[in-house]
Amino acid sequence: MHLYTLLLLLFSTTVVTALPHYTNCDFRTNQYDDICKRANKEGVSVQYINEFLLSDKARERDLKSFELFSPKKMSMHHSSEKRANNTLVKYVPTIVRHLKEYKDVYDFAEKKYQVNREIVAAILMKETRIGKIRPRHDAFVVFNTLLLKTKAVTSRDKRLINMAKTNMVHIIRHCYESQIAPDSCDLASSYAGAVGIPQFMPQNFHLIEGYEKSAGDLSNMEDAIVSTSRFLHHNARFTTLLEWEKVPDMKQTEADWYEYDFKHKNASFVYCCSKRSKKSYDCFACERPELQYLREYTKIIMRYNNSSHYAIGVLRLAHDARKSLDTDTTD
Image (cartoon, rainbow, N blue to C red; front, side, top):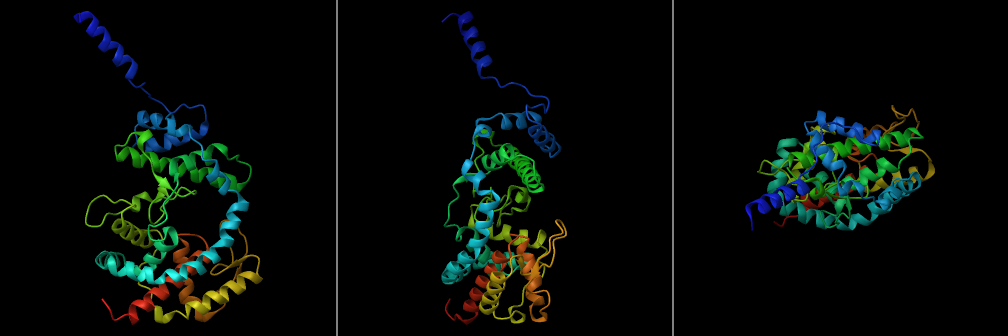
């Protein structure tokens, strides 16, 4: 081959494969403009942000997840939480075996963050059956679909749009810092965009911590345990181990709460009103002195998932697991 032909071929290949150079955050949608500017303030290069928002991944849509964000579907999910709690009680022996298997990790996390190991294990059971349930969605596609298909009509719509943008910014930042190409940055998630064994939203990725290593991975059980403990300590203000002897019988308390919830349309285990929406609730624990200690820890768990059913389900599982551990004399 002549030298001239070879140089021409090399030049042509370079031109075809070279990526365009992006210098600004001007997109066809103002939503992407905002994401670009916010991600850039977080330290992500404009070039990388453009590549992400113009990638094949950004053209994908998850209509199944979008449907599940509808008020009707969310209400159905809330009502099914009680049924899920009743189902998971049979897995208490599994939680106990898990606590024994990862005892060293729980020793480390409990000492460092002062969060009861049985509560962390119960959360992992509620979220993904301690890693047995595999996510079927992609976090970026979930939030991108929600962003682009939601019309900003109600205050709820506007909150969902802002939530989607916030989590997209954190996904882009995570992939950038991990040096992963946009089309290759796949984060398996739930329909709501939650990632890993403990189901972290991307906006909480800064709380990921590795066990005896610098970088954490939410698909790794040891890292999931430590990261969940860290989340509860820092984001939920869980700073003192719960003392179970101060808690009334959880089986009976759970049953009493379900009966109360059935009789009251706007029931909450812990709150009488919402500071944000000014909505009033029928509070189950507010006027019951014997429930005030439990009420405070229920509030803490609700900062992980804002559902009374979820929090009470976690505390019931944790209570039963702790009781089994205390009465178990085997190794």
